[in-house]
Length: 255
Image (cartoon, rainbow, N blue to C red; front, side):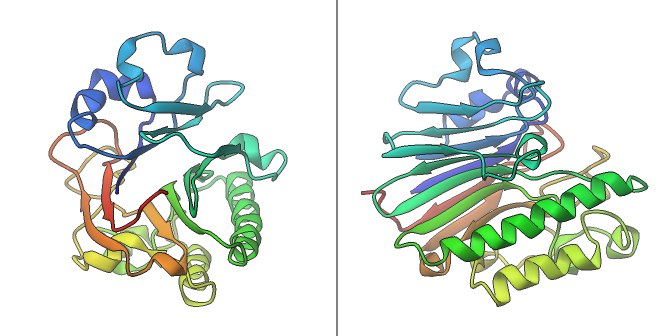
């Protein structure tokens, strides 16, 4: 099973930059897209609805974010939101449930340096998300949660650790949150199961790919899937937004 996840920073712009032309040739079973910046009813062109996929959207009321998931096999259920109240507006989450595995597409809140209110909101979101991820560990199913987490785990995941230090995306508390997720809760960074290179980045906040990159676009797996990863790639040949698509192959049957 192949999953591609991508933060579009505006799906219309990404489409104009060739994202759909590229992705339809990748033979993905599931495509997770974040930061649509559009309502579903705004997407009138056929390019947004590739043949062979069932598309599901979770819009933002004011078109500032939004997420989508495209699946070749019709899911048993679709879940939207995480039950986090107002934080479900600032962030976005959609989940497709299959027989034994659920695939989520998540857009976490982003915080800019010098914006304490944004940082507090981001911290609140991740505190609630940690509780949620802890609870679903007891469910009799596995999870793959793909998306834009806007934080990197360690120095191998940032292009310039010194420059990133003290900035949102690489704060000590953010790195510790991911450490707890992996160490204590048993979740797995799917990409790192097959790729240990220290020059793999997926987000360039300033748009300059020569500097300032971070690997913040992740596919995080529940512990039962840790041995299912077959292949991982961050696609950087073409630029569809300031984020690069993450391609992962798994030895998983959706059932």
